[in-house]
Each structure stands twice: as structure tokens, then as C-alpha cells.
Length: 127
Image (cartoon, rainbow, N blue to C red):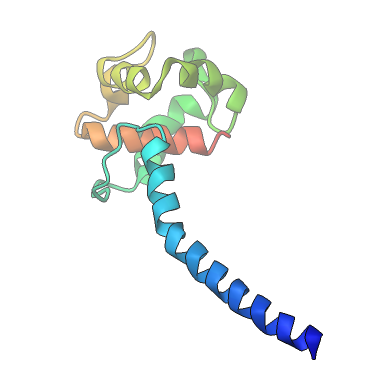
């Protein structure tokens, strides 16, 4: 009987502890998000063209083979020096042109948001 009485006590304690942890979970999530570094991407959903389509139409010609020093798609070591400069610098280079890369990567009708998401796509696929 002594053992059963203690089990009942611990069961209540376990349930209470579980409820407390569940109550704290949303606060932990918010605190973690508050401490996370902020990037320039907004929380609004992306409404541009598919980044794969943009890449396959405009970017693939240089970034698949590395023409004129372009970082090759799928090669993290090619992208790392560019990633180290920061996404803002990368976007600026795409918009204005950089070395042999023409302004906007020849996609004259791409929005800045589409270019940004395409940059993220190429980097993500190269990790």
C-alpha cells in the first residue's frame, strides 16, 4: 500500500509538471524567435514566379558551369566567399551587376524580391 500511495502522488506531480511545461512551450518559442537573427525576408508570403523557373531561364547558363567565375550551382565551396559577404551584398551585386555578371542577371523583368528568393534558392541547393 505504501508503494501505491507514492505512485498516486508522483502521477499527480507528473501530470502537473507536464501541464506546466506545455504552458511554457509557447513562451519558449517566442523567446527563441526574438533571439534569432533577423534577415531581410519579410514574413509576408512570396508571390513571385517560381525560383526554379527563374534559375532555369536566366541563371543556369553561367551558374551551372561557372562561366567567368560565377559560383557553380551545387558547389558550396564556390558560394561560401559570396555568402560570407552577406545576402544584402549579394542582392546588390545581382541588381547592379558584378564583374562579368550583367545587371539583374539579364532578367530585366525580375523584381528585387524574385532575385532575392532566387539567390536563396541557389545557395540552399549548394549546401
